[in-house]
Length: 227
Ligand code: NI
Image 1 (tube, rainbow, N blue to C red):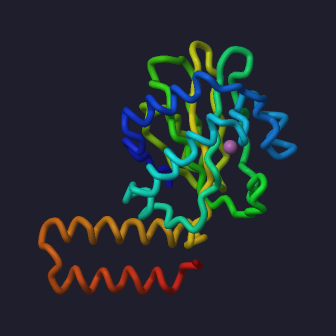
Image 2: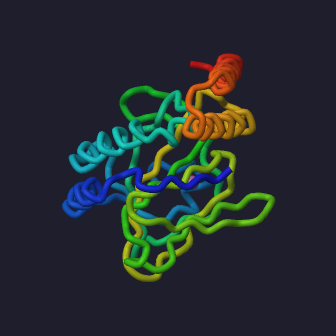
């Protein structure tokens, strides 16, 4: 499942992040790719230890934290420290690849499974040409290019690429999520159920059926979740 989340960041937060990025130094993106992906990866990233990344990371993590749909859809156990990348000029694309299954966070020793990938767009789509995130699955391919502050979430198992940027600069934040519910089908079923319950609550309040179905949701979550 591919899920678009609008307005993860407020316009003011996008502006603050862009101001940090404007003064930052970039490094080649190959450093954090696996050996195979490194050969396909041609972009730039902010250094993990940079002052800019230190300022941006908490803004993004707090924004994800307060977004109810992000929580319901991903059921996060751990969120990998967000990074920021840029595609422009000669460093302008990332060929088709599947992300490494396990990521190691710098310094902290954190080791986590990449159940879900998230790209949070930081540049307005009309400011650059190309740069679509293309997600391939057996049913076909989807090209995603969203407003600044919007995000897309897709399973870590997915073959994906970033199309060449031919004008302007594509700026984005990217991160991975290890979910409490590892299995995509189970997690998606819980997300569907939660959305139905929220819709029932809006229509009929917390009546006996809504309360019973909420119990079912939590009992499925209890059966499937690892905390
Ligand atoms: Ni990737």
